[in-house]
Every structure is written in C-alpha cells, then in structure tokens.
Length: 392
Image (tube, rainbow, N blue to C red; front, side, top):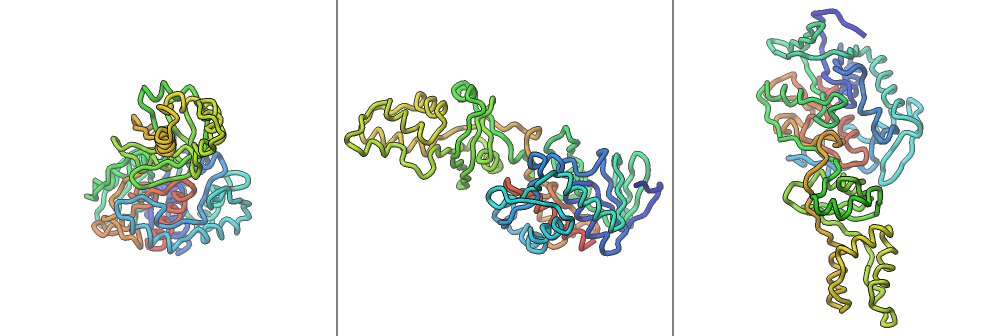
C-alpha cells in the first residue's frame, strides 16, 4: 500500500513486526486510521524465521515470572488483558493447525508464514495501511507527530514505536527505538543480548569444543535461577535451551553452574560393596547418564583423587555443580532477543503510553520486558501491542 506525501493518520506504528502488527489491528478495529511504516522490504521477518520456521507463537503457561524486567510487576497488566487463549482464538479463527511441543510451547504444524499471513489479513480487514521499504529519517512533535521518511512526510496524533531491539542485525535490527526514546527524554535500561549462546574461555574451549554437536539434559543455574533442559556443545562454547535460558540472567564475572546428572546419584554404584572401585566402573556409570564422549572427557579432566568415600562424595558434588566462567556471549548476531530497553518507569503498564510525552507509545522488544525461551516473547508482543492498540 502507499500513501501520498503529507498524509495524516490517527495512529502511525513504526515497525511491522509482531507487536506493531497486533497494535495496528486492534487500533484499526476501533475505527482509527492506521499506517504501519516498516523499513524492511516486508513485514514480520523475525516471525518467519522463528521456531525453526514453525513459529513458537505463544506458551500455555505464560506468567509474569517468565519475564525479565527491572520492574517485575510491569508486564502483569498487559499479560492479563491479552492472554495466550486470546491469541489461540485468533489462530483458530484462521484455521491454522498447531501443536504443543514441550513445556506449553505452541508451534504451527506447517509454517510461520501462516501467522504472518493471518496478521496481514487482519490488518487488511481493519483498513490498516502498510508501507514497506519506508525508512524513517526523523520524528518531531508539535501539536502532532511529524514523521519524515525518504519518500514522504506523515503526521499523526499518536505514534507507536515497535522497532524491536538490537538482535540479528543482518535482518535490519537497529537502535532506532532507543534513540527515539532518548530524543524525547525517556530513560533507557542498558540493552544486552539475551537467549544467546555462551562462549567458553580458551582453556575450556580447548578441553571441550572438539565435542561440538554433543548434547545432554542438564540443569543450568546462575544467580538463583535454574533451567532443566538440553545443553549443546558448540565450536566456541555452549548452547541449547538450558544455556540460552540462563544466558539472559548471566553477567560476568558470575559463574554458571551445570548439573550434569539431574536427579541422579552418579556414584551410587559404589554403595554396593561388590562393585569394584576403579576408573573403569566409574566410566561405565557416567556413560549411563551422559553421552559417551562427554562422560569420558569430563572424567578425564575431573578425575577423583582416589576412590575413598570422601573422594567419591566430592566427585558427586562436582558432577552436580560443574562451575564454568563464560568468556562472553555470541552477541547480538546470535541473540534471539534484546533484554533491557525503554525503562518501564517511563510507560503506563495499562496502555504502554509515555505520560511524559502524551501520544507516544512503546511496545514489544524495545521495552525493558524480556521473555524466557518458549513463546513468551511473542506473547509479550501480542499483549503489549493489543494494549496500545486499544488505547491509541
């Protein structure tokens, strides 16, 4: 769609991702004249690649505790007013088949494209104008917002910023939303890469990274938070769901702690007095709960000092508390989301509007609310977008 230079709208949404499209739909349904300005050549690029192309579009067990924010209470209002059931109803209305994978995670049976097509169809029904390949050059405010792009100038009484974070720059991620917030005097919580693989320091990399591709179910812990899921060894460090989850909470120089054998007593075999106390028996025991190569390597690097009860108890403790000091993360290039962002103290929890700048809204990833892995970030996008769309 296109709009002539100087076009006026009731609402302009900057960003055609999950949050921006949902906001546009809700505002359009209320009779507002809405335009979405998207700088890429199509909307919803992150929707398309999400969930391995199947889009993990929400989580059945969504709770405020699944989100990271300087204000852990901020997300409660939006999440309560637009729930997973609300989005599922929309998915079912469009006849999209879906399934629960694990831990409440809902995925499309076929393709992420169905979710994007659904949102675009809803936008069309609500008479929303979508303008792609539209780069915003600057935004000013007099009695209304004036948005100047490379091709035209737009005006609106309400401006919704849904420009996302810094994650996956090759898909066009920029700091635009944070820069705009600062321009209008709003505070920013320093962003950082979240849901991102961790890098091991050189010594640990030399010890373990030739095992790239080996995975195991572990508990990863950091700073009082723990996740029991898969861990994957990579060429440069660690990944897999447990590691991606804990990465959002990790800050150097804090260590992460890995329980290699959740719920198992790894030296229990030696309680049998008939069991020979030697490295061969120990190897066989470790291979029972870890992939063979990882079991052999970890024992080679963390051998018991002897086979006394005390030494075996120490080995048991270390197997459940393998302490690692990551050298860093893979950064925004590999991060699924950006944590931090526009300070929630600057926004209304009910509407996402800035009390300091009436008519200015921030939604989705650009806000300091970050979900755990498993569909929670999409649910925040739908919920924050719906709240703003119902308020503009």
